[in-house]
Length: 428
Ligand code: NIG
Ligand code: FE
Image (cartoon, rainbow, N blue to C red; front, side, top):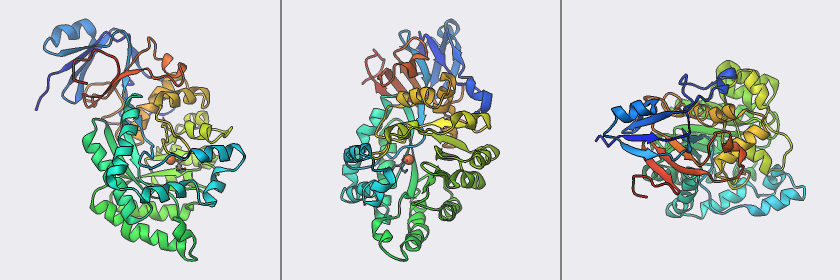
């Protein structure tokens, strides 16, 4: 059914990110396409025109006008890496790390991911849904209109399927675009770590039972593995991800997050959509990502929150021609934030991106990390009408007012996702 068109007028700037419909590399990342005096026409769920405001006002008289009141309009952000389905918060680990206990040591003691696993297994689907829904709304309130959500705190067949069913329910209920990733290989569950043959037994469970069940119920578009020394090895990750691909899932990896271990090389070898984290990526890993066009999804909030002084080598990745994306890694252990603009701030101040590069990383390249760059991430004719309106006068203010909540409204597929204080022509 056709709906009344919407005409967005009176934006001080419209940041379109318009251009080639694929991950942007090198100098392409420097063009965010900031336009003034243009209006945006939305018909049904797509952008139908971005043009001179007076011309569009004259030609689209039947459209409902949305007055942007001098704010800045950007594409809705794409948060291409979250672990939003979890139970309780893990604030006790933050203090432990502050006293010098490393993240991996907390995991060895049965905390970390294991703590979230114990907790999630006690909760039912409705309870997990009720916990996750406001978190996703919080992301929408930060201008995010597409979000990837991983499983990975169940690590049994039943608890992983339960998690992914929660993601499916959220995707059907909320206006934002929600895409599910199966991360059954997030950790070797403690009950398997205790057994001599446990690693192999858990791998067999993943390959022979969990993955076929996820594929059968069509519960995920992507598969991911925590490929890291101490968790899953490169060989194990290759086996799991090759199996996932044979079941029709697209491939992502947590790679070289804390230690360089060949994760990025594997991502390139498998032609993964994205390799994520990469704080410890090797030169060979950077080369492999560049050759295969795999997106490097950088998560500077994680390094900040873990108290690390290192960050992924974003400049070297860009210089090597790797498309770089930014995401929150929203999760209870290493990045408990839904503040997407704060991640842009860290992109500029910690990763040394320009504002344009950070914007492209949070839109077009985030979409590319999900295989959606042909329809998501740009304000351009034919692209999904995913928009965010900001209470600023220049887009450079977005990473500047760090930690601030300046998103006034967001729309996904032309439908309101979030409305703060704007007199918008739709019911709140
Ligand atoms: O991306 N590294 C693996 N997974 C998450 C952390 C999960 C957790 O600690 O709960 C990450 O950092
Ligand atoms: Fe993660």
